[in-house]
Amino acid sequence: MSHLHTLIQQYAAYDRWAHQAIVDRLKEEPAATLDRHAASSYPTLRGTLMHIRDAENAWFLRLTGATMRWPAEAGQELDTLMPHVERFTAYAMALDETGLLAICRYHDLKGNPFAQPAWQMIMHCINHGSHHRGQVVTQMRSLGLERIPRTDLVAFQRLGGS
Image (cartoon, rainbow, N blue to C red; front, side, top):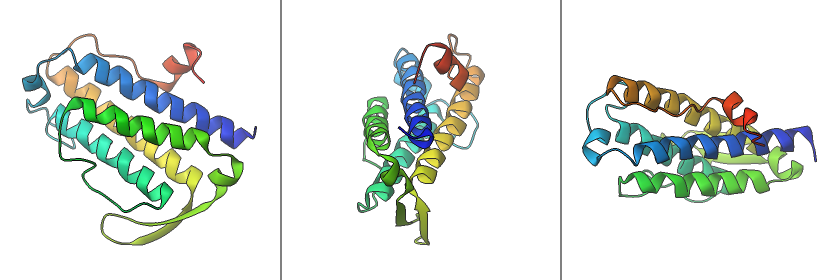
């Protein structure tokens, strides 16, 4: 197994673990909490989480050459996030060295064409999720929520995540 493959495996597993920790915690809150204003890139917890969901879907579709669909689905339920994360994670983790190095051609949401190795697209998607999870944590704090999960990469690694 190559170092690149090992790295992508760990980051993809981390991404899934961190998203699941946030979803599990927020399932304890009433729907109204997810829809309360909490300033960030998106004005609510639900809005931020649905953006993460839609991006995970978009990057999966780009990686696989499938037709773009935004948003990922019409529903805005919290339970719609993890199926998209799981699908993206499974795909990323299944790629071998050749697949990770393969050049993927895709268009952004504005229609601009791009070509990148799959591993770069995967890393971008995971980094994007980390960025917005940080915003979710800030939104949770601003709403006065407690028991905010620790989703740092090092926390995952210390649990033996790989």
